[in-house]
Image 1 (cartoon, rainbow, N blue to C red):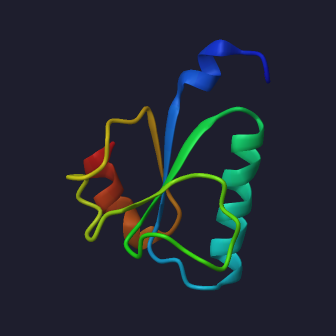
Image 2 (cartoon, rainbow, N blue to C red; image 1 turned 90 degrees about the horizontal axis):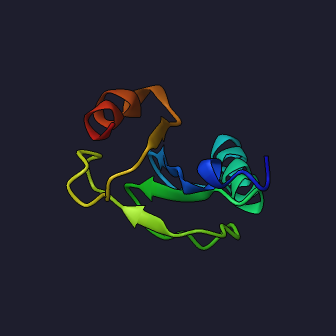
Image 3 (cartoon, one colour; image 1 turned 180 degrees about the vertical axis):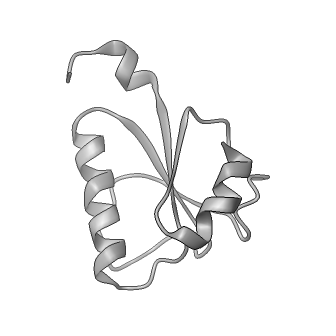
Length: 92
């Protein structure tokens, strides 16, 4: 799928509630980096903004309440924790 032009055009936004140093957050960031290595267009949306403890290879957009006002249109949104799902559905 690496050469599939249609898959690369999909814009992914991954919503994380915070950027605290936690195992689950680290796994999400690892998955984001793997998607980027596969040529996907992935951005992270966080209430905390940029982070300094992980080498995330994409932009982190800050969104205080996940209502989507500052988030560009995307094709796929992923809520990484149950508390974000309701708000992420507004963006979707």
